[in-house]
Length: 322
Image (cartoon, rainbow, N blue to C red; front, side, top):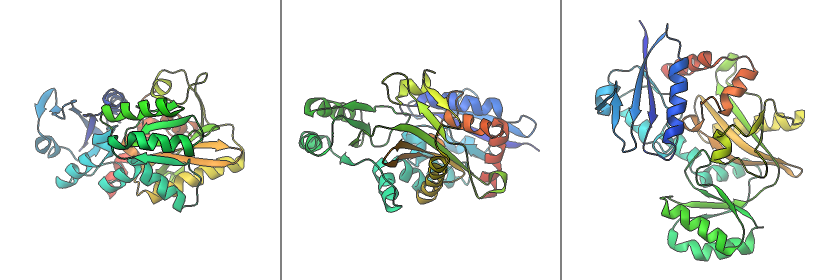
């Protein structure tokens, strides 16, 4: 008898389209002989759809055995959908609601990194729009310019910009609050080589298997922005051209942060490699990790001979074993 796998995709977030692509890649690669796939679409208003018709979560969740959650953005990464799945007793891939929140809240993640003894860019956290002017003044005085301005909880580099000087920084911060950000992180712009390292639980007999480190080279003077990620213009070298010591340290840090942030099944952490050391940026929980053809994790899996269908089957097994 086939296992019924619900693939939840879409959702009411700014990463709706990316989520659709990740979900489509999963649906196309789940082994048909083992799984019956249910494509569960969640529209931008949060309405669930099954087989092209609007439905309610309670109806569709009673008909699946396990859920995969390529739900990039707040809905899948903040813990909302995880709490819903737990209410109906549906096993799912990725962290529980608490772990999802820890990874998505960039300030909390940075605090855990510092507790682990890792370097991370200095930052200011602006929680309220009315504090933007005063905080922008502090930022210009205390951080080298330009700085990186990013929403506290969005992913895929949505809303991230680089700005320098009081007026541009203030404008960038105010724009994010206008667009609905629940808080804004402004941090040092660390110059170095971008790297990302993925980990997978239970792969090849290891409790936490390290995938090869990928070096990310954005086009021209761009950083790894949303456009750079999905336009195909970014060079991604796997394994990256790092020293053995650097690669091993990046893999170790990714493992430490996976555990420190309560992640499950798999995650991917981002870093900047500089002559002064390796700076931790953030950890992408399972719902945040892109699985589109342009995404990083599938590239690192392919580099060690793990096919995408085998990886997905492994994830389903992990979720069902919990």
